[in-house]
Length: 435
Image (cartoon, rainbow, N blue to C red; front, top):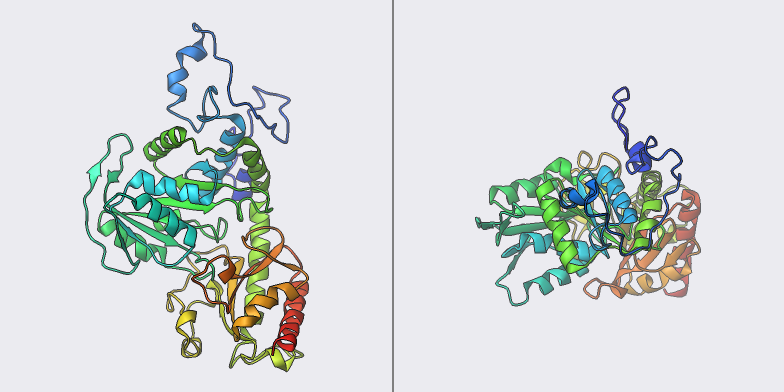
């Protein structure tokens, strides 16, 4: 994007539309919607040309290359997508074939000997297990005492190898609860460790973990960044250019680049991510407030069928908008499987843009979790989240460690009143057919 000193710094929405904009003075008739390049290889410049003489310099700034050589290194569609992601996420962004691949990129860059994590997306746990094969790696709980391991400085990346990696997922999958990033960042850095954050459930404008001083941010771009249930992608972001170049080199060698079609679809979706996510967040907060009113001891809106009020259908609702917990909510939480994290943490400053559009409910009877999603009209019973359409899933179908009572809800762009009415009728039908 060409800077104009007469203008103030652009806002987030403007950056999403113009961060990758070509210079109109050099290309006066450039297309408004960027062309998609599918080429994997490119013609080499003439040996005596200025471009050929500067070929090596181009590799020093892969985020804005002077030329393309091979699509495993750089390619126009992917570079433009990463330029927009870098503006959105506040660092140097690299795209990968999936969120799990992006997680592997972080752990491979740090090469930790100790990994601290708890709960969250099961796939990341599996990635870290694979990384630890034939390595001397210890796994500890997120709230355990962190060891101080100096590690060995790698001059190429500027990272200390073999130390501590603290992995924090917030908001948490599948419940949408928030964790205190500032707290975990201070603990990790005090022990000379690195902290990586899975921020998939709350992309900007909801939160930006770099504001709490973290080292790496990861997103499954399949979810809100893609937002249309049609692209599989992952993103890793760092604020250190040396680290970025090292991870870019690793990606070139591993070959785990994002395909051109996927990159094009992701770029298309990024133009509207703030509009979509804000609306989804607002609707989710309203649904959470209403569903919470159906739990025991709460006052449901007038006209709500009595059979689904006062905890008769829903035992617990999980979401960052319900944090910090009240004393009554804490006393209600008797079931060990409905344990809520960070009871006293208030995420309002960490999430200034709003709360995650994804949350979870705990139904009174296990069987109800199996049927409720299938009795809805506007919620599709399917896994994943972040798309423009609302989804509802009995989480045990994707994560065997979960309990059958737990149902995850991903809020789309449908009208709030329609979604609320749909859940209400589905609850009534579930209780009627499966007493």
